[in-house]
Length: 152
Image (cartoon, rainbow, N blue to C red; front, side, top):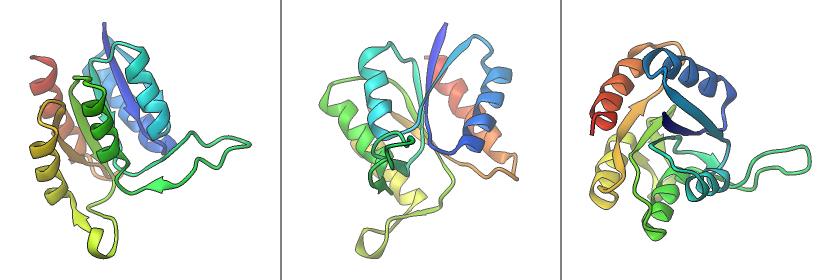
């Protein structure tokens, strides 16, 4: 059984990713975390074979009494930093709905961020997918990355 963690706070995107994975990797056990902290908790507590990671994430899960803390435009980058800090090794694919991140002097493109993550987190980071609910090409990109990642 392949344990796949989806770290994502958008319910529609979660549903689309889960449907895609059920048809592509039917043996996968899908686990969902809705924030940076809950995603990190899962990878520390459970054997995880693959992480599908959003880049822009709330700090904590949003709930009736919890607003979720700040939203981090680079939450995925922080997630990868924490994996490195705790010496956790697992393949990570970023799936994002944005082509640009941050603002002002911190602004960057998905392409530049992809290059940075490949350099700094090569033990874990496998690539990025630009997700758009109305365009199917994200599935082809993800299928290719899954084939490369899960065959190793």
